[in-house]
Length: 396
Image (cartoon, rainbow, N blue to C red; front, side, top):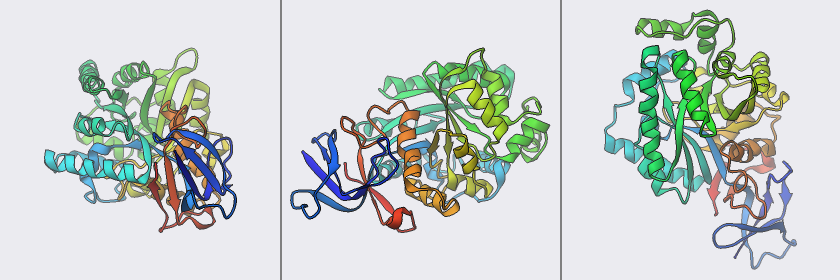
């Protein structure tokens, strides 16, 4: 039995307010036996820490296999420039170097107190590490598909399914998922989303840039020009938002079932929000603030998203579009740019909503009796404000 105490805790169990003098009792496996408060002055038999206890965090969007690209990409290139860099640099490091870069980030995730990750893969290189860490870190792998030409759609889907099946054979949770509106023919988007939703969830890059919106609505802009210069087909021009375009490809008579992770949402609008809430049974809206600044020098309209009561989650994206994969740095960015955001709300995005996104809410996401969420110490967050000295450390 372990008795862990601290100055404060955010249990996220029905409240976003801090609990003073928290006492969390667990068994040796980390299952929470009770959550209460210690009596002031009685700390002798407790494992006491200066700081704030929080549940383990869920990274709701990551590309762990791109970890070898740390510090390589130019910033503020827009989506068109970013794609050019991915195409040029993705294979710039050998297999051994790619593995070692991923290995370093797996270790960092564990030490930070990340307990689950919604991870995007284009190949099987991350699978051995995911298997090695599966008792410490839950990874839900989404094998992301691309392809702009209609006649290639069936072959691309089946190739992606084989990669997902390799993960399943290793005891890992995986399925195919569509990448985005601008990298896929309408046919590939439709059949991939349908196949992925058979597993219960998909992850989809949505409204990440104005370039994406311009391509779908008007058939113009830097991204559309990029594709035409490379001789690739572009999606049909609809006059609608990019999110509406996606929903129109997968819409049914009733709400589309399954958890749909809409990632980035930098240029999400009220119009597209209304369509998503109308057509999707369980949409989640993941933000990756530092990645958005890295590529676009822009952040999502957080207050619009909050006003609509969206299920917001928090992710890091990859080291091709971020300088560090650290959930606390993402929180710091949010409070720095949106000073009115309280820490409890941000933690609900980083912990609770992420657990729901992955279907792990019964065990993760809050400090509650009967759960095994991991216990993390958040230090140097005076006044419940995240600053450059704040850090997280896994305790359990």
